[in-house]
Length: 143
Image (cartoon, rainbow, N blue to C red):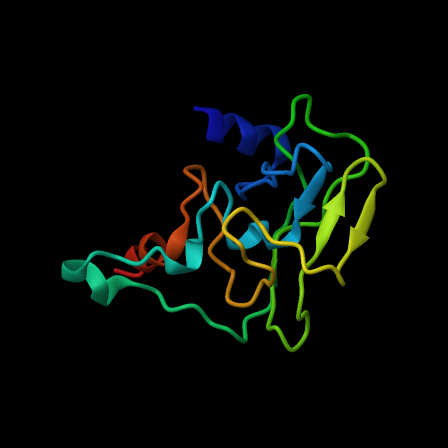
């Protein structure tokens, strides 16, 4: 129900930036690779379903349709950039967006909670009303 309400409120079915460093107010741009200590690109299927795992495309360039955080009330002012995916050759270090100063720094080597500092192959952020994530769940949609 919450995912559906968020989808309706924001006219989007994509995952929000919700994980930030409380001390600094920074959102890792690499959150598109996973939040809450997860790495969506490595969430493969169990061995008996491995044929359904969708491989990460390291040359993919994608951008989410929404730029939002999940802090209530949903931000009306400056927001972090939308989730994105691109090769390291285009963006070697993904950096952070700092909420207090509305600053985007793509040159910093700033990790998400899993430790990722890039967005290569990170096209598995949550989508759909259920915020389906990971290589296994996306792969299952192909079968």
